[in-house]
Length: 371
Image 1 (cartoon, one colour):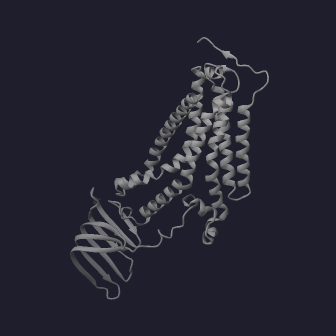
Image 2: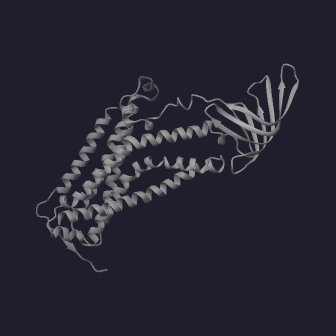
Image 3: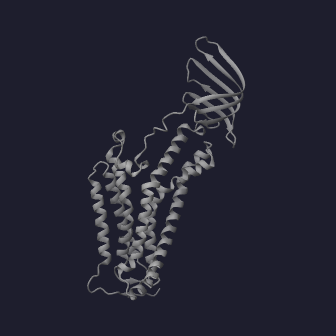
């Protein structure tokens, strides 16, 4: 019987928390995705690249939303237990506060384990790929260079294209190359396409003419062509040598950074990020214990426990804000890392003791009110 009830509560908590988390994640993910529509609408980025771009946001969103979804799921499930009188039945069967709370605590530990996998592996990996892709699009990707109907300057070259076709081909092209002030070049072409490869970025132009003005002689040189390749940029080491931010680094890189990186980023900032990843998953346990402790205290009321839900949300918000505040302040005061661990432990232990406390003389009061 106990196992059946535990499994029932665990399943209810799992379905509710995961469902709420997915709904919140989807809503926020879609909102965040709208910020990057410019890449596909105005900059010619392929749909596949756009999808990859926004999918890389998910680990960060999940790490933030899952604790909130778990809190809402626990409050929802236990409030329904009260409203449906299931809580009374469990108490009548001899279930203690701790016994009723065990499935929720077990689920919290599962969530913590999952968050560790996200924080320690998937989060830094996704941030690395996201930032590399963003850097590539903003700095080296051909699609960011030319906006149809506008004059665009890139590394000493001014581009103009009348419009861009759906396949990426540009029509009505004008190029002014002033990289070499002694030999300025003007190119007009019917159509062309920007191409990137390991050797660099090239503009393949079709059916046009190239005019080069030699400042030394003052004479122009005119060349008509059927196909012409303009070298725009050589591969740079900028993207390869791009300094990774703390959220892009794995745990071992944060705790033991190379000496060349500590100067620019700061060892304290890197360690603060490491402790944040190790510590923040345990806020889930604090959320669950706080909400359960408040829920299972006091008299029973079939109308639910709105006041206690509100109190649980407020306390969990304060707990989360305090944890984030300590973690961020530890970037300047490293000693606060230890304070954050102690504070988290005190909150969790206090909430657990409050949950299992059995005040003398307290009885269950059942209130039924007519609508």
